[in-house]
Every structure is written in C-alpha cells, then in structure tokens.
Amino acid sequence: MEHLSADVVACPDCDLLQRVPVLPPGGTACCARCGLVLGSNKPGSLDRSMALATGALIAFLLANMEPLMRVSVAGETSSTTILGGVQTMWLQGEKITALLVALFVFVAPALDIVFMLAVLLASRRPPAPRWVGALLRWMVLSGVWSMVGVMMLGILVSLVKISSLATVEPGIGIFAVGALVFLLAGMSAGFEPREIWSRVRWADGEGPETGR
Amino acid sequence: MTRVLLTGARAGVVQCDACGLLSRPAGPEGAGNCRRCGEMLAFRRRNPIQRTWALIIAAAICYLPANILPVMTTRTLKSVEADTILSGVVRLYESGSWVLALIILVASVMIPLGKLIALAYLLITVQLRSNRRRRERVRLYRMLKAVGRWSMLDVFVATIVVALVQLRPFMSIVPESGVMFFTAVVILTIFAAGTFDPRLIWDSGGEAGREDD
Ligand SMILES: [Zn+2]
Ligand SMILES: [Zn+2]
Image (cartoon, rainbow over all chains, first blue to last red; front, side, top):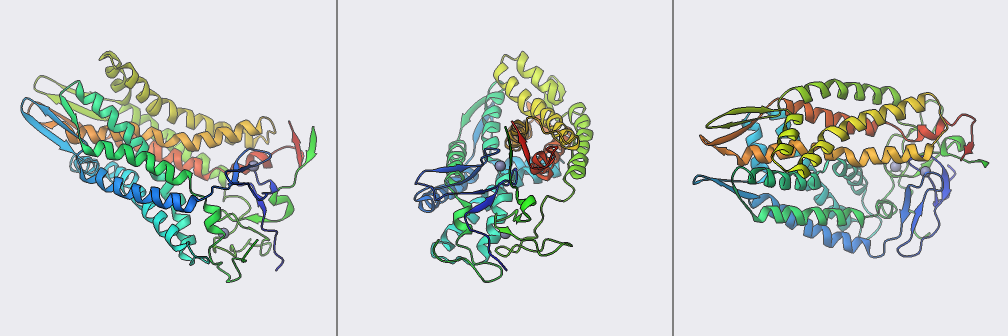
C-alpha cells in the first residue's frame, strides 16, 4: 500500500487537502479556505497539560466534597454540593434530568481529567500503546458533554436568585468550581491531540514511523 | 477569482474522523478501516442531512412543552407559584435583576431557538447547493457547536436552587416536568450539530472545484 505524505492533511471542516509546514514554537496553521486551526506547535505542552490536569483533579475533588453555599431563613439552614443537587432532583421525581446533570457536570469532567492524565503518562515514551488512541477518541466525547463552565454560571445565578429570598453564604465548593473551570480550560487549550496521535502504535502494526 | 482546489474526496483520499490520518479507501463497497486507529472510514458522515433534519424536528417538538410546562414551583407560607422558563425570566426582571433576566433569556430562549433556525438554514442552503457565503456558513456552524451547551444554564440553576431551598414549611422549591423537555431540546440540538457535516457546505458549491469569492 502506498503511503501518503505525513504532512498533508484534509481539513476536517471543508476537506481541502493542504500541507501543514513544520511550525515554529508557538506557531499555528490554519486552513487556507475555511480558517479552521489545523495544528499548532505548543512547546512543553505535555508537561503543562500534566500540571494543569493534576491541579484540575484536586479542584474537582474539592468542588464535589465541599458545600457550594449555605442558605438560612428564620433559623433553618441548608447547604449543598453539586451531587446533592442531583440527588434532590432525583428524589423530587425528575430522574432523567438528574442523571443527565450528573453526566454533564460530574461524570464527563471526571473522565476528561482521568483520560488526560492516563494519555499523558502513557505517551511519555513513544510508541504509546493502542489504548491511548481509544482514550483520545473518548476524550472528544467527554469534552463535548463536560459543562463545568455552564455549571459555574448556574451556581452564580442561583446565588443571586436565592439571596433575594434568604441569607446566603458562599462555601469552599464554589471557589473550587471556579478554579476547576480555569484549570480545565487551560488543560484542553494547551493539549495537542495530533502530537499524541503521532506517537500511538498503529492498528496495522506499521507505525509510527520514527523521525520525520 | 476562480481557482481549482483539491479536496480529499476529489483526490480519492479519505480522512479518519477520529485521528485525522489520510488513507486511500479500501474499495468501492466500503472505505475500510483506519490503519492507525482502526476507526471505520467514510468520505462524509452517514446520511447527515436526513439525520440532522430528524433531530431538529424532534427538538422543535420538545420545544413546545419545554416552554409551556412549568419548570419549577415555589411554595411559601402564603403562596404557591409555578414558573415556566419565560415567566421565570419576567419574574427576575420585575424583581430588579435585569442582568440575570437577560442571561437566562439568552441561554434558555435565544440560543436554542437560534440554533434550530441556523441549523435549518445550513441544511436548506446545502440542499439548494448554494455556493454563496460558505466561509460565513462554516463559521456559523462552529459557533453553533460552541454555544449549545450554555442552554443547560437554567437546568443547572434549577438543580442548585431545588437542593438549597427546602426550608419547609417556610419555603420550598420543587422541579416540574418542563425541566425534562427543556433538557431534551438542548441535547437534541447538540446531537444535531454533531451529525451535520460541514464539508457538505463546500461540496455543494455548484460547479465542481471552483471557489468563488
Ligand atoms: Zn478548511
Ligand atoms: Zn484513524
């Protein structure tokens, strides 16, 4: 089977064939026709992603263990975590919504962080094992459905909404969610899946070709 | 200016959806599997136009109960009030927090509706084989994919508020079935954006291989 030149790509959004040149550090290549980013050279991206993913893991644990806020009216107080909200939703009979919220703000971000750590660790020394490719594909999905940023805005809106009805006191959880939003954004912004794919062992056992 | 551009489909090479590797298709009956990651290869997503239309129509059907049915009920010692998404926005506006009202209005009403209209526009222009404003249309598509998730805002607000405001008998808030239909609209439109294939915008460019701009 004849091999296609490794630096030629087809744009995922418009299918235009083009050559992606060797990029200088910090450089980005965009599609000549539709402008989609086709690749970028992020120096030290593996180490930076690793640091941010570790930070995100800690923020994620804190965000889910510590209460988001405390509410008090006439001596009665209550507090909740994100999963506490999911549980109440379930107990009040909105089970489908409860499961989906849990999927978007707990399961998907958790998988995103764990997969990222596993992929980065496993691809330190190429060739990376085949399961790294499978995780990269799952990461596209967990990225689409992970909605921590939206949840952060939702928590702030709830805080303002409830403060008109009762006394509200923000908890550690709310700050952990805020930190998690930034760490997750940095983690995926600095991550270059093309770089990892070039290290993964091929399904047909032929690649990756060493050296370019 | 008119120039001839070579696409993967025209050159007879197919790009792996998962890992981006270019391959020559295995044969005329099927493109085979990616040599690097094993994913099934295809020049375009499967039936993108029919599938996206089906998802948009399903979302539009759910959009009605999502806006007519209440999403939450507030019980206090004095009153019981059921709120739909729109009446919730009006209540926020009347209570003086017009910034919050605007945020909820954009996330819950304008984004889902705009997404449905924009996806229908993309499908119709592809079906008419329009070759106009293709760069703008592919940008519109990317924007749709990016903003879709923000529609979940009201559902997340309901999740937090419902958990915190259970101070019986003074005040309690419970979710209502409108929440489920609203979640369905958001998820269906996210799936719809995922099944549409932006490469169709460029495939349908009238005369093959020409780029007019
Ligand atoms: Zn392109
Ligand atoms: Zn592949």
